[in-house]
Length: 337
Ligand code: NAI
Image (cartoon, rainbow, N blue to C red):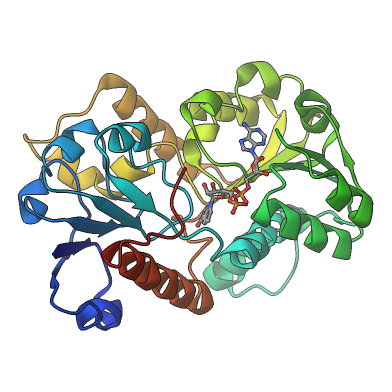
């Protein structure tokens, strides 16, 4: 049994090193993509994170592969349908970060409402302890938060919002009506939520079906001065439309932990100076648009760290260890359906 781990921090490797009797365990520092599949050519199992690309080409280059252990909740970096057609099983970590990501979401919301980062940058640059209009914020109390997706994370966001005395409207493909009753909020249609919210926050998985869920058409329906927060997946928002909405003043600000094209952004210099990795025109466009967003003063961007706390990482490692043990014992758990 050969198991190859990609992109795992050195300090986390000891969790897996002597945990699987008789298995050949190895660690590759980089993430997995089509440029380094030879490092797992005869692997029975690979363990990756969301920065790896496990598309058709990569899966075809791993002929012995039977199992993928993803150290994440979202698995949109894997072509799951194709993996299934090849009999490859996938386990994920279903619930490590529901409080973690919800807390971070409110970190972004508080920074948007109170200009904490701007004020801190100002005082660092100037040593001037006066305050100016650019630092004036707004109260969250009494404002309406629109939650798109009331799964594990969305539910925790809702509870925090109620602690701030916000009104909440939510949209979900599968509304949890008893949770809504217990927690005294209403589900509305998608258009109703986005057109009546002061702040909109996304908490749904990405799929081809909801690609660019937030687009120019529905940004036009939003309240002027709305704030948009995304800790789910970058591809849920059409970046071009977001920039348009910000420039038009429909969207007053955005807090984004995830970006469309974040993978390319991570390797920007490598990609631009390499002849082996070519990008499509559309990818270049998104990369440029991401740069525009990063430079906008009313946009807060973080590098996909909503999950990244001591507690959540420990949980990811524990669950992943058990997922791999389950596969070895022929009793897989936490399978992606
Ligand atoms: P979950 O599976 O518990 O909840 C997702 C909810 O979205 C479900 O209630 C589902 O019915 C709903 N939904 C699915 N598609 C929808 C659509 N098109 N429209 C409306 N509702 C839809 O997932 P959880 O744990 O709450 O996570 C949500 C997402 O957050 C993950 O899929 C992942 O992409 C992202 N995430 C981001 C992290 C980060 O570090 N930034 C860390 C962990 C998760």
